[in-house]
Image (tube, rainbow, N blue to C red):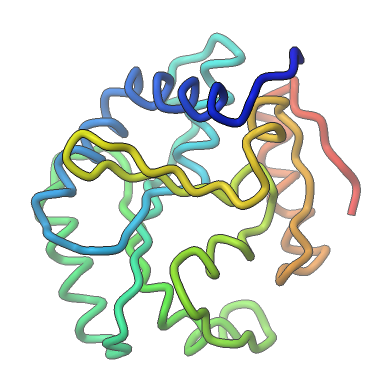
Length: 193
């Protein structure tokens, strides 16, 4: 891959997202909810880019849109209310919407993954721990301005490199993710644990 500056890759990412009508419309419409600090991220963004790079339909293989936000109200009830708001706004979307208050993740993480984690201090702190360097990524639109958060940069994303982010996940979680992706994109470069 030719080396591009971070700004160039970010602009390229934005142009690709804008071409995925479902994801782009979601980003524009979600502003109506007046949720202050959120991103959509991980798989739906990564898969859109990989599909573009492989000449596939941009929504191929996308099962859900990860909508993450950070709210100091740790009640399950408040998270359910937010989830209902998002789902109501996007009831006709062909994807599941996975709504998670990242401030609450530590409350259920052990039950789901078998070990405890410390509470995240911010939304960005949560994204910093996502399973791979290519999927540790969030995007949002505020008015007409884009905000992209990619703590490991965008080089792995555009290089189709799957590299573990060992900040929090286990080898098993990483290898499970890799297994699912191998069959979808044959150009992926898998970095072993």
